[in-house]
Length: 291
Image (cartoon, rainbow, N blue to C red; front, side, top):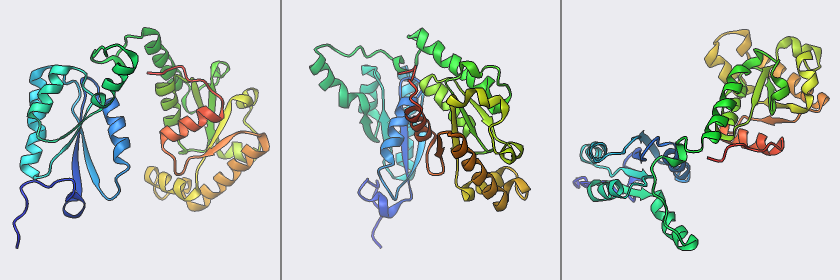
């Protein structure tokens, strides 16, 4: 047969390999690089990507180690890694360009030049600004919102509800906690959440602790089949995870939402990012964090 090529390129990847290595190379946390990179890769169907984060690359020595790791993948697997960079340090970026054998995609390189030309000033190229604590007030707002979400999770206490921006409600395993935390971390929203139990649903009215805050309530729901799947992973072979129980709870909670005029959202096919952004928009909340 024909010999295998020494390197598998992007043109050949669809028919010859199942997974493509993808490295995130930032100067600090890799959060920005990973968010942008993963978003772009969702546009390419039929390819599985193995994602690797290489954070805190702030010295030539660390960069050399990262480049060696990337190049080793090329040598061992004979497939060119994709390297997505959000480096702002010019020397480290040049080192990456010079020594890395992967396909280098640099985010700032694509946007800095046209922005500098438009604004008439040079970019600062200061490391870590997007996730540092240079804006101390912004940083503290994030921490305060996160603490609020943790202290008011799962209906543990309702005494702080007067200061809540929103109170998420729903039956168990509909995404209340992760959504509350995401709203806090990304937008600085003070989000509490409260679980609706069988007793609450049988009464067909809002639990008494929630009644004074009806204007802050936002309901989450989910398709019964998906709810059963999630619950079965948590408590297999329990009444809690049966198809009948999940159907009854979803029907009851959606009926309650409609009767009480509570805005609600079906989260079945939505990511946490989509859920949180939709809630922010529908509830008319103003984000406190922009970085």
